[in-house]
Length: 156
Ligand SMILES: [Zn+2]
Image 1: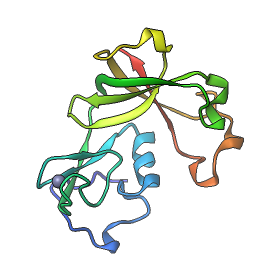
Image 2: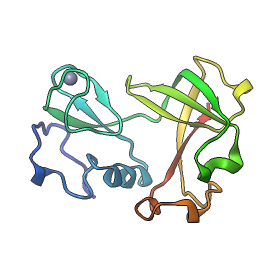
Image 3: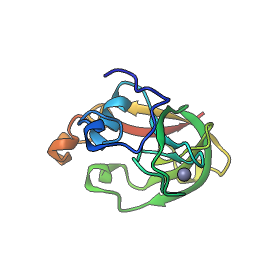
């Protein structure tokens, strides 16, 4: 996959969105498996959309560009999930946080730490793992998710 032109703006036509486009979830996770975290950015109001969307959910603008994101940021909110999806059941309770990346884009994800060890303002770094290496049973995967990596934040 080649790097998207960061200056390309919409509105996007259906032909602009191929199966491996970061504007689709398979494309988003495909980029993530290559270590690239890609957001869409509204050229009208600067809102980040992560994963990318073809239209801005803040102002409704349809001129968006793709923007590679930093993998470091800070916890702005967090909680404990005692009944996670079945693939993560063996990891329960799971700490989940909303992280504001250093670009100001926000991404929700699991934190590889106990709830008591996490605090608002903590610095974290996003890691991308192969699902099996992360202890996720591939039998739980939906067929279209089988190749998708697992993202997790680690305390920096
Ligand atoms: Zn906008």
